[in-house]
Image 1 (cartoon, rainbow, N blue to C red):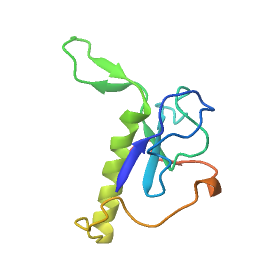
Image 2 (image 1 turned 30 degrees about the horizontal axis):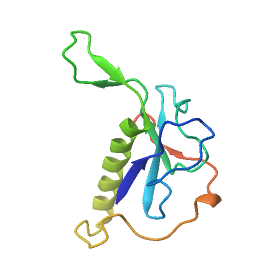
Image 3 (image 1 turned 120 degrees about the horizontal axis):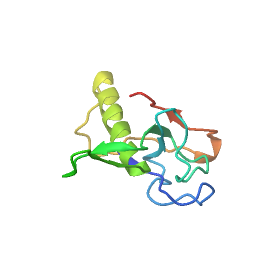
Image 4 (image 1 turned 135 degrees about the vertical axis):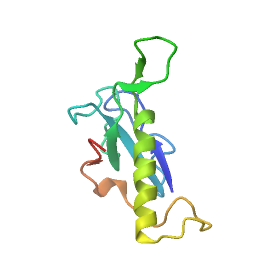
Length: 117
């Protein structure tokens, strides 16, 4: 299983590699109100969305530090997908660790949300 951030181009930017690959879970970012990150690629190619705006990160600054981006959302989806696989009893040691099945991105209308996950 491989999850990849859709990127932070323009909202109408063309889909990029690797999220466009058939066996890759593409991820975009949401803010704390479950709204799409306006800086993220939003061409309808995201499989899932998760928290990715103003994410707390370690910092030497006493007030802390925050970052935003689709790459901050991807780990949430990776963790959730792994938990789902384990609950289903999937073989996580299989030779194809990216998951299976081909899919057509053109058939999707929007991303599933993991808001509040």
